[in-house]
Amino acid sequence: MQTGVKPRIGIIGTGAIGGFYGVMLARAGFDVHFLLRSEFGAVVEKGLRVESAVHGPLQLDPVQAYRSATDMPPCDWLLVGAKTTSNADLAPAIVQAAADGAKVLLLQNGLDVEDDLRPLLPESLHLLGGLCLVCVHRVGPGVIAHQALGSVNIGYHSGSCGDQAGRMTIVEEAVGLFRTAGIDSQAMPDLRQARWQKLVWNVPYNGLSVLLGASTTPLMADSGSRGLIQALMGEVVRGAQACGHYVEPGYADYLFAMTEKMPDYWPSMYHDYSHGRALELEAIYGRPLASARAAGCELPKIEALYQALVFMDRRNR
Amino acid sequence: MQTGVKPRIGIIGTGAIGGFYGVMLARAGFDVHFLLRSEFGAVVEKGLRVESAVHGPLQLDPVQAYRSATDMPPCDWLLVGAKTTSNADLAPAIVQAAADGAKVLLLQNGLDVEDDLRPLLPESLHLLGGLCLVCVHRVGPGVIAHQALGSVNIGYHSGSCGDQAGRMTIVEEAVGLFRTAGIDSQAMPDLRQARWQKLVWNVPYNGLSVLLGASTTPLMADSGSRGLIQALMGEVVRGAQACGHYVEPGYADYLFAMTEKMPDYWPSMYHDYSHGRALELEAIYGRPLASARAAGCELPKIEALYQALVFMDRRNR
Figure 1 (cartoon, chains in turn blue, orange):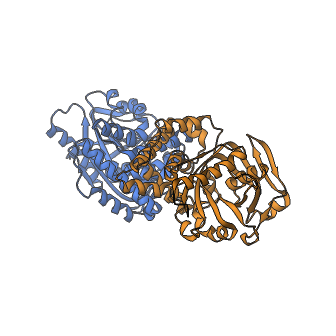
Figure 2 (cartoon, one colour; figure 1 turned 90 degrees about the horizontal axis):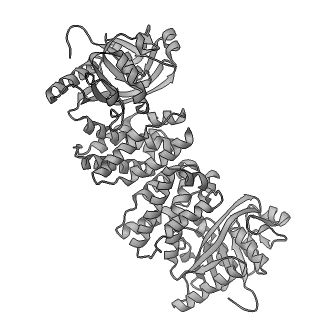
Figure 3 (spheres, rainbow over the protein chains, first blue to last red; figure 1 turned 180 degrees about the horizontal axis):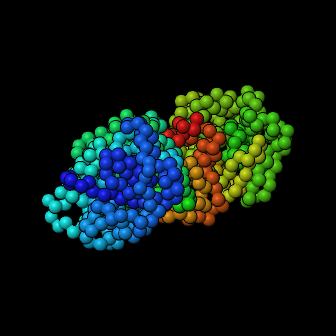
């Protein structure tokens, strides 16, 4: 955590994730700048609003909002909450808004989501990944619903920092930003392992919400879907282990029990599907399947789910 | 095949399957009697009509139609085209309409579909199973669309016939009925093997039509669903082999290629789903999975499909 002057933070892609964390950080006194596209006008006019079941209603108004990255001041931290499918397209905006030696944090799910972006960034920029365990969704222009949870686990991906100690210093700095804003955050020594762990939740719930048109409560209430969720979780754990990553015993059971206690929730992939947007199938299914297969491990139920979702995604657009 | 007097045939459950084969047999000169429920009035008034893309429009009028099995004459053959989920409920009607030593032929898909019915029939009745490779569906009261194919493969299940030669004589008699009516038919020495073989088609196409809300043409046009169909077919073949049944090499490829040449088709499970009827999940998924598992063989993609369909079936009713 820096002392003295608080770092300047840029939010690239102010959807539910970027908007929620941006508002939380701004309320904690950070200098936060939001890059917006279609919602720019609404946010300038009415500010950003988070209807939080945890923190109550949060309003940020005025918002330091921008239509173009060329108008943004140089930022020390850039938080990217856009879809993984658009990472490469966002590279010019990220480079434009980055201060020298800036840190770019992808708040995204899935495996290797940094890989499309990394070659498009200068070596001097640090690239990190953040796994958000949070129930948020956009309810209208500049309005975000926060139903539950909020933690962010962070790991270093790549950049000019060669040694593990230096990398962890940067990761701890990111952890400090979130903790200052009242958000639980952990430093993850191995980003790829953290991404695999997060898949234990994302693989079953994101895909089944689309495939079965069902939110978490009905999925957790039926013996068929419960069995399928547990089987999919088990396959993710097997895949992670085959790729050499440690997964705490009982971790899948913990996520399963946590989901039973959550308010009814529609995962982000369902929102993407219902709005006709591209699904993040490669990040959440295709790459993990390919990694596990390269390690000699077949994950047949995940593959079946992936193949069904590929069909649905193509038909949907 | 009997010579002289043609056997009397009763159709129990005059849906698409019972109606189609009943009309074909009646047109061939057999004495066919139809047990009907909700469509009785329409069939008495307007007859039975098959809109066949193969044989042209076929009309049977008047129809020997009955509201109750107690009014039917004793039948030598009883063809059951109802859903497997209602077999036990149909037992009293079957027993009522059966002549001494009658043969009961279940024209149904799935494994062990005879098992619920057998204990409810007297030992003197022969029970047979028939696998129909036919694209038919009901389009209105007394009106059936026949799009393509039509063959029936028949095997002996159980009854007073102890030896294989006697059983095959009865099976050949059934084959002769259909062939006389211009329908391709084969005698199957092993009914369970024949039921497993038919599952190679039913497992992928029936379930995916419900899960993905798609008929055969779009399912065969997308790489995701094609891969899933082929993987599901491969698992059925593995399950059959684990249970000790021979499956001809290339049989799955043959069915896959055949489906590509078929007119666009909605499998029967889709029609059941869209009408809010119970899906035949135990016959087509639950029992094959249990049999394979008992033989030490896991079929994970079929199990995933089954679990998803269990959820959809419960929500649908």
